[in-house]
Image 1 (tube, rainbow, N blue to C red):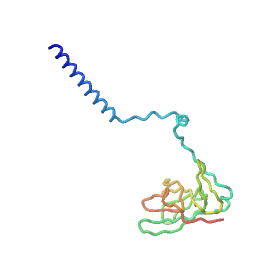
Image 2: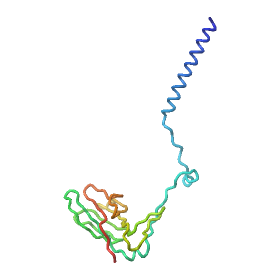
Image 3: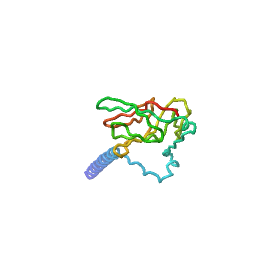
Length: 172
């Protein structure tokens, strides 16, 4: 009788252990995995983590000498009226009838990004025209980025009332 009782207790203990460890295993599986802490600056590459590449804008001198201004198509979304505004490269211009000002930082007739360098592959062939602009409204910066004539939906200027796209360019 004692052996049977001892065997029963052992069986209950083993079954209980399996049940508890089974629950524990399921709980471990459903627990979210934590990410390892980020390595100190400069050590990510050693651990196989990608490094953020800083971009550098290089405007060739022959590009600077050939181009004077860009043309922007400004559309009022509420009236669907558009107008073309010319803004000189390196200058700021008020967009008529709005509180928007546009500063043209750069124009590249053949935009190319290679690694961390942004440049133009040609001084005069407009194979991928792009302009880097900054837009302010009531003195507040609201946009800073590239507009692409051939790809107007890539990094577009977004505003509740206006759209601005690159519509052309002027040589000197």
